[in-house]
Image (cartoon, rainbow, N blue to C red):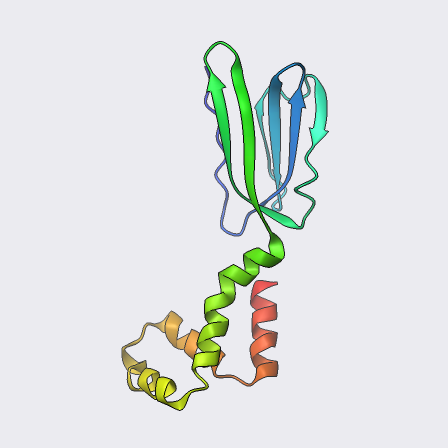
Length: 144
């Protein structure tokens, strides 16, 4: 038995998954946005199936594989999330902070502690207090 793995780099995402199968799964292939690919099992043997779920609109969150010592891989599944939902969940807290900072009482509590806050959180505070146009331009540049 052979072990195979792929370690994704920072900001590297799976953009394509191809499955190869005969009567049973023979292998699968993963391609990433950083032009890397990793083959698992016997790719090129059997029928090639490109999964439509990974067409650039969804992000892979995880996968599961069932393995039997005699039969090999007996099942496989993928957990994925829509890209728009992913970014909404990822940055929801920043937008909530921006809204809370409009209340003077909350903003004053943060300003009192600003010297004790780490650099990242100071930058986040300053970005969230920018006017709308500048705020959205910064976040568009950083996250898109």
